[in-house]
Amino acid sequence: MVRSIKILLVLSVALWGLLGAFGNVVDWSGTTSAVAAVTSMATFESGADSWKATTNPAVIIAGALFIMLSKTIAGLLCLAGAWRMWAARAGDADAFTKAKTLALTGCAVAVFMLFSGFIVIAEGWFELWRSDVMRGPVLSSAFRYGGMIALIALFVGVRDD
Image (cartoon, rainbow, N blue to C red):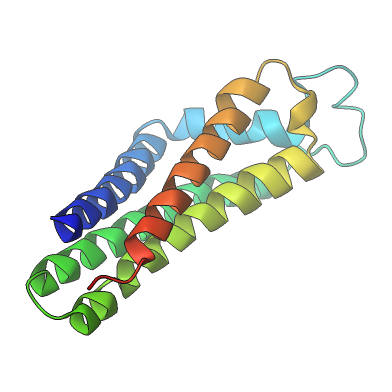
């Protein structure tokens, strides 16, 4: 039963990544606009005057691609990992542990993107913490997603008997 729950949790991370990436692609202008709002630092007083603020299209596209591709890769790795876990669910503990590798890698990619992209770059470098408009919807969501995915990865990573 625990193995089945682990598989379902990994599938939920796959769904989060793939639906998120799909949404980023379908609303590409919204995705790039959100990244532009962060990099321009225009959502808080005197942010746009900072030497760190940029409206460089290459930086904006790179940020949007990083988000979308990271979600896609995380989602696909978790999907493949869940498939392997499903195939190994009736096997011994070593086989099931080995089957978790792709799933855990997918979770790690997601947490890396959320932490490095949203916390380190958006919040740390572009000072998004100063924005009343974006702090809650962006940083709180990134923290919530990253925390839940990390918690799922910890639970999935626990050795099964």
